Length: 221
Length: 281
Image 1 (spheres, chains in turn yellow, brown):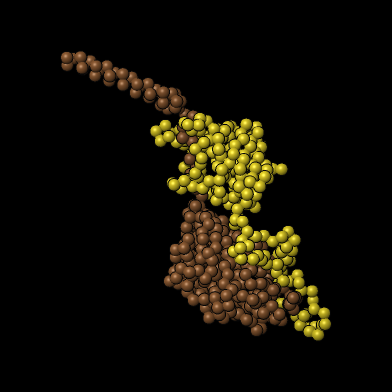
Image 2 (cartoon, each protein chain N blue to C red):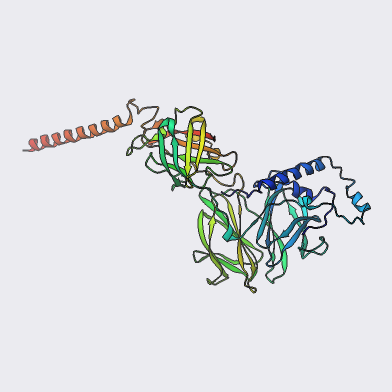
């Protein structure tokens, strides 16, 4: 969502070429001697120099409200991790009334943070979380994340039917007060998947875990 | 059409524009600039520092964003068939662009209907999680207006070329524009999705008299503008805890133990009451 609408590949390539060309001009450019001097000496030339390439290729779009593109990419609807026996539906969620990510009570239903990136987003972290357990529903599938090895394959199916595959790159148990949530929920940087649940020690008085289990995964084919 | 353009690529805006890649975030040294064309029925060329930068720029179109070195850029807007920037329809105007700031320059009509241009600064300060920023800009040939959301005025007496903004829960807003003090829309109602963690900028442009008022929309989101949730509470039972309760037993044992204690207390209490009742006899 909200990505700058990027020029087409061809446009981007020509922009890049221009950038390289112009960068060399800037780098090598002494402020004196504008090279237009030669043009001045041939004012009568009947043939204009080829100019189209000199017009910058500035990206343009219609700003019409009616033509506004969709803000978000298709939502994840299913998450499968074959090696861990995880196959859960995914719901789109926002925040609870305390400003925390709001998860379904059932640990067997995962939650995607709908304000963040989605698997098809050009950049950023797709965050999918689930409760690790519940007194009502017992231990959930995400309890198996904590011990998983790097390279473990994850497949996320989105609402358009596409399947996005990832492989675990890291699994960490991080004390809740130390979690860098701005990194976990970042909307810039390489596309990636972040899985979150709870783990570590439990505070039996406050009824909460003291750590989050955070898995990061990178796209694979 | 193709304009006659200097062959030389000297330093200046053309270099800056051409070398700039589309981007969403201004680096510390650069500014971000978008350009919106809000003058009805007039395709134009845009010259920056004398160089043709936007050829055949059509009404309702948005160009950019471009990352530019901070500095002052002189912009002239001409009819699309002009040979150069010497007799602009709008300008020339100077745009002072500061490093790290996100701007939109808008070519539009004044309240009286004359072509003009305004440089707006887009608010990219951080937004609370779950919230989106809605900015409304009046760049139409029309008197002051109220902006209605769900039929109720949320912005009042907005005059050309002013803006008003508010942060509100992200989601779709049914927005309409009415003459100030009234609720009969001259524009809309239209559904506007206010994106979370971003500035959704709505422009009312065109001319009331010519009956061609329209809404344009721009979304500005830069890194660090949104906020993450405070935490992810993802467990409440302690069933997979790496520690146990004080006894070392898992929580279900504590629960069962607690239930047993309560049952014993009930039995003991009942026995005592019976004993007390016997004693009273």
